[in-house]
Figure: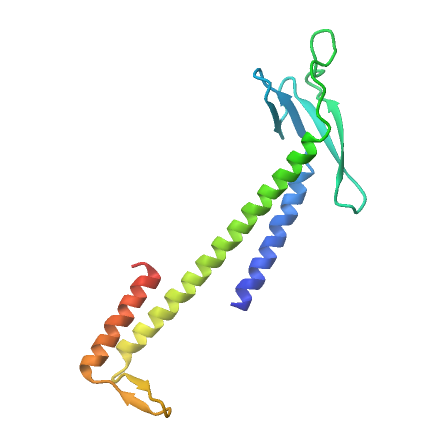
Length: 171
């Protein structure tokens, strides 16, 4: 179990490093015909490039909006039709990072659950196989001595172990 926890930690660090690298990519802001603001990592006609400058060790980034090369971000006269909101890209970046963190946590939980199920299946299978291979099955008494099961009790124990294996392995 300790090895799987270490492996999960290493994988989560690798994923979070990739997420930080992805967060430093260029972001393009555009407004569609209905007036909805959209952000994307690919430029579209009329999109405005939002550069994220990472600096200092505060963990925050400053935003610098410049028009994308494809269009000047305004109308035919070159004037802006709508000024960009100052905090929208930062809040979207924080929200996107929170979504990425949540997805990474969900993946880690899913991997842990799969590993736990695999371990439970292996243990149940080993217990069942051992009961089949044993000539006599016993349980440990209160004094630590062996109490051998009758043939009927041993058969019931094997049936219970088979059901536990089926439940744990899903077969």
